[in-house]
Image (cartoon, rainbow, N blue to C red):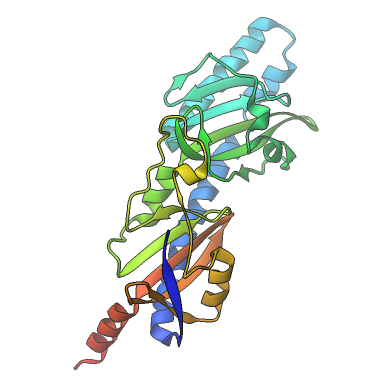
Length: 278
């Protein structure tokens, strides 16, 4: 558990600004990651090979378009470090799949249950759904998926989808943070801490454990769940750990994740003292 409890003290203006600047900077970095991933996938889905594949009337042409679709997926995987990328029809059958840097011909027909499947088909053309994190059977780790519809005229004939490992987001968000004076927690919509700049959180699949609770800890803040903690931060309270350390905190939301930045009040006091010394 992330066990921090609360005391009701006011934020000094400078400390509040510093911690808010930190969390907003990290939130913007995450938004840019999503923006780039969305753009890459939406652009790839506009290639003529997809329309050609679905409108071909002979097997030779269809196979040629399928080969091009595979090459498109390999190119996207190489440029954007996707764990897995696939084209899926409305029945949940895979048409094309790339895993890592190779074309996988062992296609499945059970993708309709995936958490990105229905939202991906529900999206408008050229828009991209970002999924909650899930344990990927192909990547064998926790991932985030992006999915966009593939259009032929006005018909959604498939979705194009790819996965990024959750560890990629952890590295991006935790970069340049070290120790307990200033740290960042990332919490998903279910209240699990999926990134913590103070410690490594493993995302690789182990044994037959599939539940989030097998990999991640529930966020808890002095006995409060995330919603209550956010309300208290909104009230600009100073937060005190069970060890007695006081922290300023601020949060930001990106998609369905909440980022909470903490900055030690003792560090702020030291910084302020150095600032005013002649």
